[in-house]
Length: 398
Image (cartoon, rainbow, N blue to C red; front, side, top):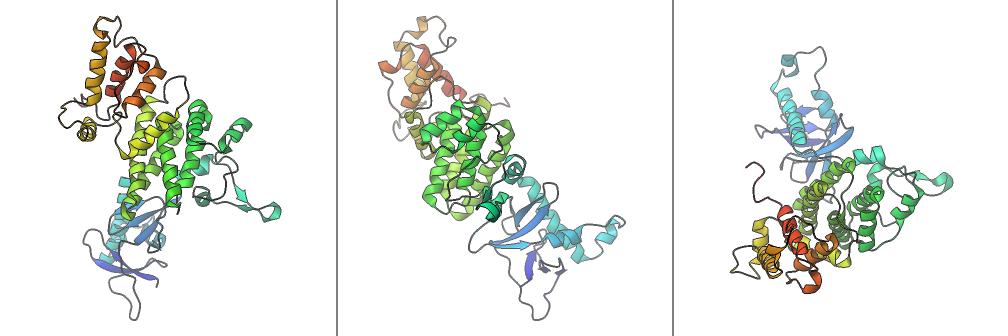
């Protein structure tokens, strides 16, 4: 049926709309079947500024910039209603809202636009239109252009060329090599020009991926990469928008594991965009990668809030009143006679040794002598722990 029930946002009054003509009535026409509104009904509106569609749910007041999918999802295109609601150049505001029905129409569109502004995130499709290469499938005269939507969605086929436009033949080769997680993280850490390509390919392979195990592997790799290197400032907002959309959508489909990854990745993105890529001269190690994988499920001692650290610590050391890592590093410094060492907390420790000690102690293991070449290493790690706190001890607004 072309006729659907719509809810006026302010009064919650039920009305009947024809989504093809844009007509709104207070009562349905005789003999016409009307589709009732529910959580699975999404209204499709058009945003002229970005040239893209967005989707509004009248029940949950949620707005998405990616088209919702599912067996029970119903998309109602209300672009016609938008067109009817636009005032003509010569009309006055009183003429535009001459009847209660036209006022109701106006509020429906205005409310959808309001939630669009409040929840708007950077659209990955906008970035792809500007920076992605053109892709096609098939051979010779049977070649068919791949749309932006399909280009950014999961595919079981091998990605045979970079998604992003590039004239660098070396980077083209680097982008399509089949690597393990450590190699991918190491490559992105070493080669700055390939980072956005790696992140965009991860977006593609996690979007609308019906294979749950495959999708989770992609999100794990997201988390690993975000521990090692940031995207470019040009791509950062779009990647953040992709994470935000996944946090919102998965909350409604009970895919909590994917939602947790998206939330973790958004948080890591904010942190690494400020701090920059992993410091040091050694490539990311397998131990570092595996520790990141654990940190998504079990909070890391680094980059979390003090409350989160204490909550995890309570299971191991229920009687401790301060973070274990702080007291352990402090005791280690005293044992290494740090108080009499010139430049303590000023002279930096070897950065690769600091990274190695960080991974080791994040597993709640006491530091060994092999990991402590000098007292500047644990001193630097202690400073790093305070610096990486998600919420600083002294608040920014203090």
